[in-house]
Image (cartoon, rainbow, N blue to C red; front, side):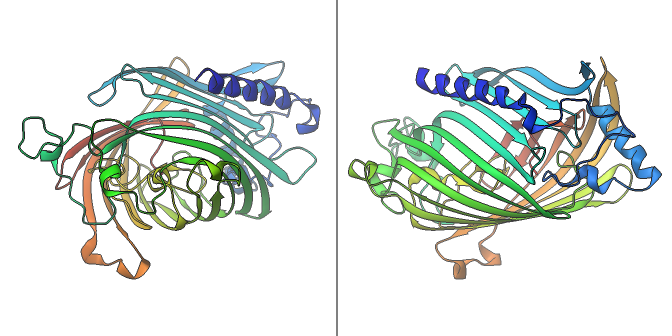
Length: 441
């Protein structure tokens, strides 16, 4: 773990140095809105570009920046959101950490955005993540994104391959005649990862990114017995070291990428992963492809009501390792089918197979706006319906195979730049509470 922390710290220091390099942006501060320079070639949803033009839209730009700008240093506007993390979970015990985000508003939507997240639990779970995004480097038509992370998950799930696999609690309940092991459906995963991407704006809301990454996945058995050991993994591959290359084409016409009220976001993502000849001597060969399509749509029904809808379709092919089945790809990765990022009434990573399809529909109602210590907080109530299924091949997908969950939730939008959400999901299997420090979509 110490090496992972050193790697993370080194990358952060390096990127902080780059952020002060003059070639990235002019060192003279940009005029403040409404005369602020608007970067219409950026690749972050083109918020500023879509607000350019009429006087009324210029006012929207001023309001947008006023809610995000927190302080000024040497004439440069910055925004910062951050808070300590402290909560208790029955699965991971007490969780302690922090989350912080810094934005430089020398250009719109921003010159760069840095985010740091750290969470450590009393049961041994660790999540550390640092990300840097520069929508457009001055003097070029390119931007960049960097993500460095380390995760130790002691409760990664595998319930077996297939859409109809049963979650049999008798197998994990001590004293039951069918008891096998308390951790029968679980495994421990250590996963350091580095992803770097080059961004290129093409035209209007259309942009392209090409990225590469390196990760190590170390899977360990938690108890005396484990399903993935007794049944085997879908492709016989458990863990290893992989390098991956991917490309993403996206269309983003949303008015806001954090809490949108109108617009659409389409993303077509392709990723190929494999281990090298050297690591192949020690691990089973990893060689798989991931195809992910995401479609997000937002409809403003009134000044306070928004309907949001998402469809995600993904196909995995090749020799896929166990840990890759537990994740959905694309530019914004999330846990596999089930849990707070997909089917919120089911356990996370509940359903596993080569083909995944799920939808989320939310009705978001703005309840009130508050301002506390110069911080803008928007409170939302949410009703949601989720659906999803997995299959071995695309032809096996069908309406009658769909799993459903419903629920209610609360969102707090902080300076229109950071969302804290809490959801209560219901399904035929269980009732599940989830808390996250980002919006679901």
